[in-house]
Amino acid sequence: MQPQQQKINIKLDEKVGEGVYTNFFMISNNPSEYIIDCGRMTPGMPDIKILSRIITTPQHAKQLLKILQQNVEQFEKQFGEIKLPQMPPIENKNIGFQN
Image 1 (cartoon, rainbow, N blue to C red):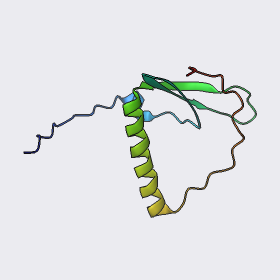
Image 2 (cartoon, rainbow, N blue to C red; image 1 turned 135 degrees about the horizontal axis):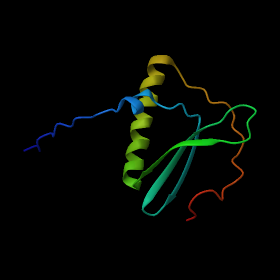
Image 3 (cartoon, rainbow, N blue to C red; image 1 turned 120 degrees about the vertical axis):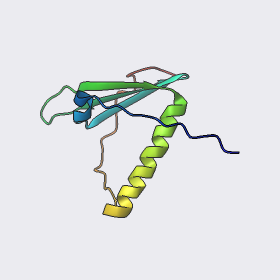
């Protein structure tokens, strides 16, 4: 016997529904949580403003990884490969939690 599926109602606040453009992500972790900072880099500006912080469990972080991977694969099947520009190496590894 399969367990019954529970109906989930998702409510999206109007302000949250507008979304926030981000082009910078920084991820740090400790044994019990992942911290994902989302921000915006602006050309010519030395500072990155963090606009949102997501704190989640390692299990939920792995679920996010899998669903993002599935979505990228579906996107690329429909629209072609997403090409990434060469990124400079991240120099400051002392940001966030240390393991």
